[in-house]
Image (cartoon, rainbow, N blue to C red; front, side, top):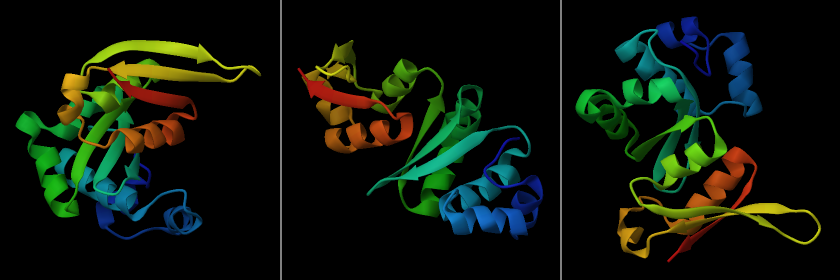
Length: 162
């Protein structure tokens, strides 16, 4: 299992000096620590996650693609428990190809197109067109999604409803 904290800290509930330093330096958050402990106790060494990103109303768990289903759990049981403990809606996104991550953030809304836009001066941004009828399916407001995708991937994204 690869967690933001070491296995001993996840198992014991206490942070070692190295993990305490990561927390103090802001490399990991309290959510990373707590989720590591929860996943370790419920799944053992069978899942990997990288980081928890906090938004106003949601938590986004960035995980290895092969661990997404394990973190969600059968019938969503694990993610429902985690959501109840944190008091926020949880979204699990698999880390991998940029385009796949964007699709995961937007799901279950339908993506109509994914375009690369070249701006004067050589800047590149991505324009993602989303079916306007699926606006209610977006669990996070459009502008918040843009900011989140930008900060996590380091690429500029514009989400457009059509």
